[in-house]
Length: 94
Image (cartoon, rainbow, N blue to C red; front, side, top):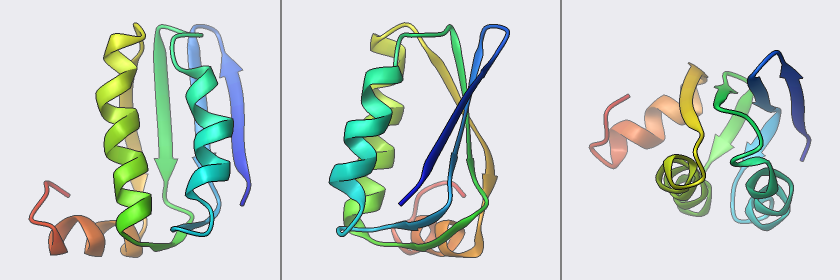
Protein backbone atom coordinates (compact mmCIF):
# COMPACT_ATOMS: atom_id res chain seq x y z
CA UNK A 1 0.00 0.00 0.00
CA UNK A 2 1.95 2.97 -1.16
CA UNK A 3 1.61 6.30 0.55
CA UNK A 4 3.29 8.85 -1.65
CA UNK A 5 4.64 11.84 0.28
CA UNK A 6 6.25 14.93 -1.16
CA UNK A 7 6.92 18.35 0.32
CA UNK A 8 6.53 21.42 -1.89
CA UNK A 9 7.35 24.70 -0.14
CA UNK A 10 5.42 24.54 3.15
CA UNK A 11 2.87 21.95 2.01
CA UNK A 12 3.06 18.18 2.31
CA UNK A 13 1.34 16.43 -0.56
CA UNK A 14 0.11 12.96 0.32
CA UNK A 15 -1.44 10.48 -2.10
CA UNK A 16 -2.80 7.07 -1.20
CA UNK A 17 -2.70 4.67 -4.11
CA UNK A 18 -4.73 1.47 -3.68
CA UNK A 19 -6.71 0.12 -0.74
CA UNK A 20 -7.53 2.02 2.43
CA UNK A 21 -8.74 -1.01 4.39
CA UNK A 22 -8.12 -3.11 7.47
CA UNK A 23 -5.29 -4.80 5.55
CA UNK A 24 -3.43 -1.54 4.92
CA UNK A 25 -4.48 0.82 7.72
CA UNK A 26 -1.74 -0.08 10.22
CA UNK A 27 1.02 0.28 7.63
CA UNK A 28 -0.44 3.55 6.30
CA UNK A 29 -0.78 4.88 9.83
CA UNK A 30 2.88 4.14 10.54
CA UNK A 31 3.88 5.99 7.36
CA UNK A 32 1.44 8.90 7.63
CA UNK A 33 1.21 9.94 11.29
CA UNK A 34 4.90 10.85 11.74
CA UNK A 35 4.49 13.52 9.04
CA UNK A 36 1.77 15.41 10.93
CA UNK A 37 3.24 18.65 12.21
CA UNK A 38 6.20 18.54 9.83
CA UNK A 39 4.65 21.21 7.60
CA UNK A 40 1.98 23.86 8.20
CA UNK A 41 -0.22 22.41 5.46
CA UNK A 42 -1.00 18.95 4.14
CA UNK A 43 -3.01 18.10 1.05
CA UNK A 44 -4.33 14.55 0.87
CA UNK A 45 -5.33 13.14 -2.50
CA UNK A 46 -7.69 10.17 -2.14
CA UNK A 47 -8.56 9.99 -5.84
CA UNK A 48 -6.57 6.76 -6.33
CA UNK A 49 -8.12 4.83 -3.41
CA UNK A 50 -9.64 1.68 -4.89
CA UNK A 51 -11.36 0.34 -1.77
CA UNK A 52 -12.22 1.79 1.64
CA UNK A 53 -13.69 0.09 4.70
CA UNK A 54 -14.32 0.99 8.33
CA UNK A 55 -10.66 0.74 9.30
CA UNK A 56 -9.69 3.06 6.46
CA UNK A 57 -12.39 5.50 7.49
CA UNK A 58 -11.15 5.38 11.10
CA UNK A 59 -7.62 6.19 9.96
CA UNK A 60 -8.83 9.10 7.84
CA UNK A 61 -10.94 10.50 10.68
CA UNK A 62 -8.04 10.11 13.13
CA UNK A 63 -5.68 12.01 10.82
CA UNK A 64 -8.30 14.73 10.32
CA UNK A 65 -8.62 15.02 14.11
CA UNK A 66 -4.90 14.90 14.93
CA UNK A 67 -3.56 17.18 12.18
CA UNK A 68 -4.72 20.45 13.81
CA UNK A 69 -3.34 19.30 17.16
CA UNK A 70 0.04 18.85 15.46
CA UNK A 71 -0.18 22.28 13.81
CA UNK A 72 -1.02 21.08 10.31
CA UNK A 73 -3.97 22.35 8.28
CA UNK A 74 -5.17 19.29 6.36
CA UNK A 75 -7.32 19.37 3.24
CA UNK A 76 -8.58 16.51 1.10
CA UNK A 77 -8.05 17.36 -2.56
CA UNK A 78 -9.52 14.33 -4.30
CA UNK A 79 -11.93 11.51 -3.61
CA UNK A 80 -12.37 8.31 -5.55
CA UNK A 81 -15.72 6.63 -6.02
CA UNK A 82 -14.85 4.20 -3.21
CA UNK A 83 -14.13 7.05 -0.78
CA UNK A 84 -17.28 8.96 -1.75
CA UNK A 85 -19.44 5.85 -1.35
CA UNK A 86 -17.97 5.09 2.11
CA UNK A 87 -18.50 8.65 3.31
CA UNK A 88 -22.07 8.66 2.01
CA UNK A 89 -22.79 5.28 3.62
CA UNK A 90 -21.72 6.73 6.98
CA UNK A 91 -23.69 9.94 6.35
CA UNK A 92 -20.51 12.03 6.36
CA UNK A 93 -19.91 15.02 4.07
CA UNK A 94 -18.52 13.82 0.77
